[in-house]
Image 1: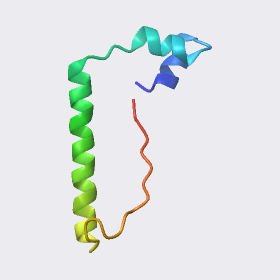
Image 2 (image 1 turned 135 degrees about the vertical axis):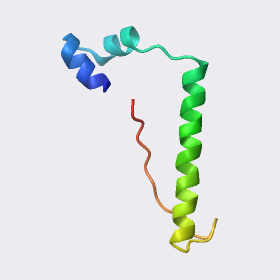
Image 3 (image 1 turned 30 degrees about the horizontal axis):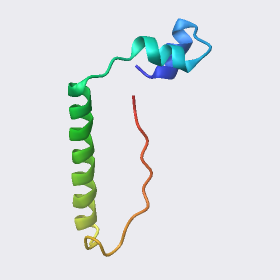
Image 4 (image 1 turned 30 degrees about the vertical axis):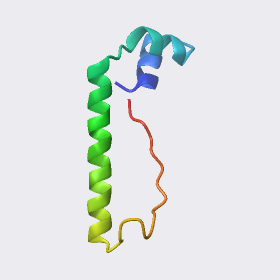
Length: 68
């Protein structure tokens, strides 16, 4: 669930309270996030191939947002 939504539902005025109480991360979570990042990078490379961009030749500006 989106942390801001959970904050609202629980009535917390500070997102830190919500994040400290309702989030629990472990090694499996970190490994899953790394796998997702590898998939994103692979998809980016594939898109560059389809668009005719040579690796290292032209860098696209990209902004990453973490979805929790």
